[in-house]
Image (cartoon, rainbow, N blue to C red):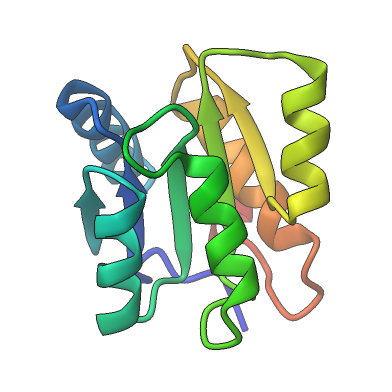
Length: 137
């Protein structure tokens, strides 16, 4: 089953400019079904109402951080397998390790461009043998 650029993507960030940047980068990569949430609480509500093929979340948000969101997603059997990419301005080794232990699919340090986002998304779906990236064409 190929990676579908029509799959639903949820962008979670409390900074509206960053949401807009990520949304534009995803559009450049061919994605069309892109939703957003301003924090982890709003993201969980959206994930309860709609099935997402990918979540891209900032780490630093209030009242629920991206790390807390990741833990809640992985603890919920209905959405636990949703691919999850964490975005952060901090590249602290301990944060990367904590996110990996919590089940993050991939990790991006800001700032980043479309090529970086593309390679991170490809890496997420390359780890799942049932997926083949549409970007490999």
